[in-house]
Length: 321
Image (cartoon, rainbow, N blue to C red):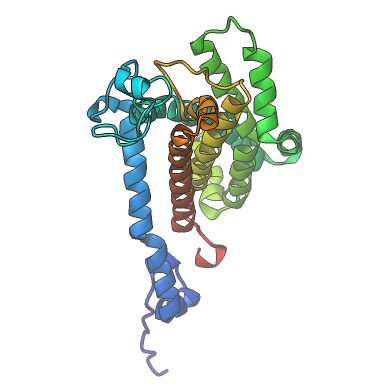
């Protein structure tokens, strides 16, 4: 028999194996698409820089050259001039306090509430989503129906209800209100985080490596934690970033109707800065509302963009496996 000369096929590691992978490797449009999904781009880096500044404002606000929260400036009150001046680029509120200082120190409460709420929702919803997607059957039916009931209730309405029931008492302290608001937003985020986790778990639970782990007798908790969870985690992280963005908006909405974080002068939040700034708008001074709203806008925009980047970067298609 004539000797057959072996042939080699170029394989793109990012696109999987096989003839289709070789075709995608030779396709310039496909290569450009794959390379673009791996790059952040200038907008991505701007989003990271902005979120880095937000993190610094939340955890080490002392790094920023702003006055103390309780410091008042009598000249602004005397002249009734609350606009920007030297050393105070955003001006003052109607009490003579520096607006930039309130924005910087208000970052902590907003971010702590949002991050902790989504973390709570991710842990609870993610756990039930993993269980539902892995075991399927009756367990999946019960858990999925519970998620569907939760999704039928608007998130803001559910958060308002929980916050109004558990933190409407006039004697409720600052810590209690923050805890209740965090729990309310976190509880409202459980269904959507759980559904996303379940959907991705269904995709990965029947992969070959999972079947192989079952064949060699690996225990179910180990399979879920070691085999399924690492592959589901990117989608969970992506939706968690979007969840934090939504939680920031919900916190502001709760503050506007009076059931959010209380307007404590020593621990403000972006939401209650917008809520308490409405009185300034009546006086023609809308700087507090506008600047706090812009902080929320740019933070939500950055989180949404990075969430899409994470989803695109780790999006694994069946044709590439």
